Length: 328
Image (cartoon, rainbow, N blue to C red):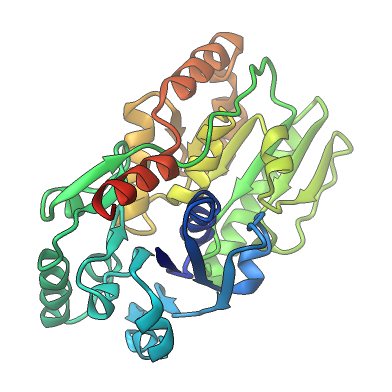
């Protein structure tokens, strides 16, 4: 088949999942991926996949949602595509009724937009014959309670390692833009806690925070690039819990401290699931970090490693099986 995958461009997680899925589908189908080229470059995309630069621009801060992207799909692409798969964009059902939507939450339910638009989007999903696909652990009730669904595993394969001490810490705030006041708050908290570290620790910090002042010789600061090489090193992650970053942390058995989880409904729910399943803790102020780190001992690392290993993985392979069963 000719399959076109379209990614929401708000957050790397949407794009990473479709890169994983594209790479596994290309062995059997003709695959096109529509996503921002500058973000796709962060991952390894099979050369046989046709990459089309695509941006839709959801503005979370201003609660605006640009629906005009649907008109950018050229007629020749539409006619040549047998199946559309989208990560978090229900508008694909305007292109082809029988398409697959992967969604653990829905932007039109989170954003403060007109009720009429929310109802239209819900009805668009309900008219589709195929189920909404989502993660068995993190699918928000706004999706699972309202639509026909199929739950699948986390993306990727488990690559965790057994840890026994904290030497590398990730501070990740996602790609969504932060307000100036929040950036200042985080930087002040980080600069204060640096003084408490008496042993050598490497901090991998989200570039969105800019330059951080550090006077402690025991601490080295690196820019977080979210590569697999970086995640292999990380022993503890303080993150704004978007599913993309959460998935990567669990993939590498990294204990999670969820931070700024009140940013939107998705983050709040993901933080709740992480704590409920003993995969991490919630932290509302980084000043508490040195004290909370004491909870992460060798016994915790061992239990956490086993919990992550037992999670359901290879979601992209499950989607491929679902597609092949329904479109033989």
